[in-house]
Amino acid sequence: MKKYMSFALGAFGHDAFYNTLSLYFVMFVTSQLFTTNDAGFNSRMIGYVTLLMTVIRVAEIMFDPMIGGAVDNTKTRWGKFKPWLLAGTIIASLMLILIFTDFGGLALSKPMLYLVLFGIAFLILDVFYSFSDIALWSMLPALSMDSKERTKFGTFSRFGSTLGAQSVIIVIVPLVTLFSGMFGAKQGEQNSMGWLGYAIVIGLLASLGAIFLARNVKEDKNLIRENVEHTRFRDVFKVIGSNDQLMWLALSYFLFAFSYVINNSLLLYYFRYVLGHAEAYSYIGIITCVLGVVSVASFPALAEKISRKYVYIGGIGLMFLGFILFAFAGQNLFLALLAASIIFFPYPMIFLSTLMTISDLVEYGQLKSGKRNEAVTLSVRPLIDKLAGAFSNGIVGLVAIGAGMTGNVKPSDISASGLIQFKTFMFYIPMILLIISAFIFFKKVTLTEKKHDDVVRALRQKLGDSSAESN
Image (cartoon, rainbow, N blue to C red):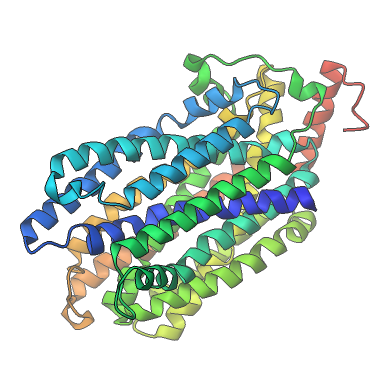
């Protein structure tokens, strides 16, 4: 239990960090960093900062398999994952704290120098966070050869990450307001020091979680894991491409992730410009936090009873029903919250089904190619999530402008054609992608838990693992 809880704590801080960076840093930039009387200057600088972030993140995506290769080729007395997990998390946390400042006043006094320094800091943050992200999730196939044991680790890790990600939505306003009050802000108001205090808390949570995980979780040692050849960087993408099951799973998961992310990214627009209840968006954080715990806790029993494959496909079916309800919710707040709950509830289970299947694909790829690539294989999942996020970010901006959902317009100002365009991207296109995703997974992803057991036995026989019974 100690090692499971340690993994959960590491994932808690890890995803609290991710949500802070992905959802709220831009809010700090727009609400605290560039608020001069020169509206043109403010708009330009906000545009430059967001453009820098987008370019850096999109460019870094394609390096994730290379980062996985670097992790796989690491050999230390602490294992190959822990050094990258610790160094990546601590350095990324320091950079997170730094970007939640004005760089000593340079943001206003020397804006071009600020942009250069910000770009460097954000690049360092993004690269080292990717190292910690890949190292964290790549540990799963290194902790056990048994699918059930991996499921326990995966469940606890997703339990922690769900709580970390969703709790940020609940606590960010109270914490920023609290720290702001400690540094001179009037009651209920926020200032830049409040945001900095919040960033420090998140950085500490992420770093302490990584330290706790590294102290209490150890890699499994067996002949299968020791039979490893270093993968050259030029062969990293070849390793991924030669694993047919990994490629089909990646395609299915990308379509699922893209449909979920674009709907989730447009959710606040729906509450503000369709429902006219932007304040009710905070309910989403509370609801998803509770549902996330229930969903994750339900996964092991469901996976045991009906298999991960049907958890994945059944979860997509439930999400599809939620999309149908949401599409017809109109301005009914209760129906909108109910639909959002139905869409979110299976998400952690689908994520876990994907994560556990990719973990099992490490041995499948090893049997097929003769080489074991844990971090390279597991790097595919964060690569897909980032790719889906990058595409959705670009689409969301275009949808908002096309639908007229900008500035302080009211729901009554949105035209019928604008609303149809908005619903097309928020509901109808994601529904089509979900159907295709489920079909691909059902037809093409054939590595079940039983087949993985067969793969492990074949590997042990091939390698002459005398410890087969003990491991």
